[in-house]
Image (cartoon, rainbow, N blue to C red; front, side):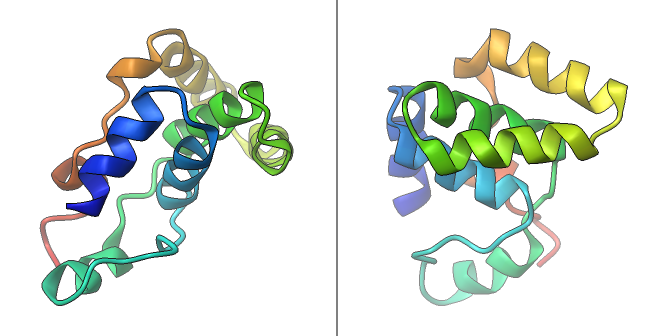
Length: 108
């Protein structure tokens, strides 16, 4: 499954994969959605701004300029609580949820 590989790549420090997860958690559709039923679930991605900001910041720290800008923009719009949650996620970033059923709603 593509999402599994995206998660693996992100957890290995690949900035493009981290950026893509940031987009997904920001509520955007993946660039290369799966076919069939999984495609329908992309519409119901579980938005989590703290996780989005954490993935963007990680990608930015790994050299992804657009991700760094998105991380800064998102942080400026987040509450103090959301920013603290994002910081905690970055501190233990290999444990940020990443499995398909953690990213996408099971209600779709």
